[in-house]
Every structure is written in structure tokens, then in C-alpha cells.
Amino acid sequence: MKQRIITGVVAGAGFLAVILVGGLPFTFLIFLLATIAMAEILKMKGMSPFSYRGAIGFIFMWLLLLPENILNFDLIHLERTETFLLMIIVLLALTVISKNAFTFDEAGFIILSSVYIGFGFHYFLAARFLEDGLIFLFFVLILVWVTDSGAYFCGRFLGKHKLWPHISPKKTIEGSLGGIAFAILFGFIYSFFFPVYDSMLITLLFILVVSVSGQLGDLVESALKRHYSVKDSGQVLPGHGGILDRFDSLIFVMPILYLLSFIQ
Image (cartoon, rainbow, N blue to C red):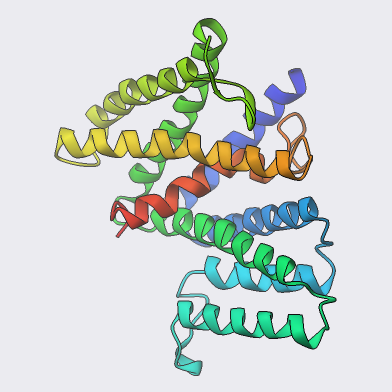
């Protein structure tokens, strides 16, 4: 527990400091975190990050991750998504060229993993560079962290009904609802001092989307770990597991906020 607290305080303080600085240091940090997370998910599947399969996974993920000012597609006259689709076709052709040494299952895993991690961290990065990106990003972080803490304490003291025992045996319905309630409370307190939206209704909708999708993101990673029979995604953060363990909610939330036009 002591190691967990020390790691949390040091890593959390450093992470928040880089968010405040923004710019190139923040971009580099997100690139590093996404790369480690991709390595973790490849290891879950039993793929070495240093193999050609790993290299393909990193290339796919970086293609979706890197912002337009770093990764420009003007020379090839294709959009990012068009380039990604072209690479999928090449990847599928590789299953034939390799005579199934590189399988369809592995190709599908790489594609889905690169979308999951690449887009998740891409929109986390993009949010920082919005006009009010710092206020917006701290709002999301607070909601995710408060939801997680509220769910833990409400589940511990009030939890009686299991939420999804086959995926995460310790999570309860009471804990989940408690997490949402905490998010609403602290979300409106934050909005009072740092208003992100003029409408209280939009603010409430935003809070609910972040809180619910954040919990769903946590369950997605839990299902992934259970499927591949691993306790943690990695050991980068002593007492906390891997990068994917710490960012599973955030990278699930950010693309949803983009699809709902909360990120322009």
C-alpha cells in the first residue's frame, strides 16, 4: 500500500505538471504512454513488441495517434483514415504472403488494438490543444478519478449486488451508481469555479457520459485481462500495474466525447 501511494503521488504530480506545461513535452509524454500501452497489449496476446508483428502494431497505432502537425499526409495525397484502410488491406495480404505464419486473428488483434489505444490517446492529446483545453482536460480527469474513487468507497461500504461478476467480481451496482453520484457532485462544484459549458443540462450530460463510459472502459480492460489471464497489463507503475491499467477509462472516454462532439 505504501508503495502504491508513493507511486501514485509522484507519477500523478509529474503527469499533471506536464499537462500544465503542454506543448511538445505533453505531446512526447502521450506518445511515450501510448507506445508503452501498445507494448503491454501486444504482450497480453503473446506477441513480442520487438518482433515484426510488434513493429506493425506500433506503426498502425502511431498512424492514429500522432497529430496532424507532426504526421502530415499531403505528400501521398491521402487522408489519415484512407492511409489506415490501405494499410489494413496490406496487412490482410500479408496473411496470404506469409502462408498464415501471420494469421488473420493476429491481424485483427493488431488493427483493433491500434484503434483502441491510438484513437484513445490521440483525442486525449487533441483535447489539450483546444481553446480551453486545460480546463476541459482537468474536468475529464477529475470526473474519471472521482468516479473511480466514489465507486470504490460506495462499493466497499454499500455494495451488495454484483455489477458484472464474470468480468470484474469486486465491482457492484451500488458502487457504480455511487461513482456516478460522486461525479455529478464534484463535476458541478468544478463547473461552478471553471465553467466549461453555459448550460447546466449540457454539463450534466457531459458528466454522465464521462462517468458511465469511464466505468465501461475499465470493464473493457478487465475483460481483456481476464481473457488473456493476466492480473495487470504491465509493471511500469509499482503498485498500480501498467499504463493501460491507469489509462483504460480515459482512452475509452475520449473517442466517445469526440463522437458526441464534445471535442471539436
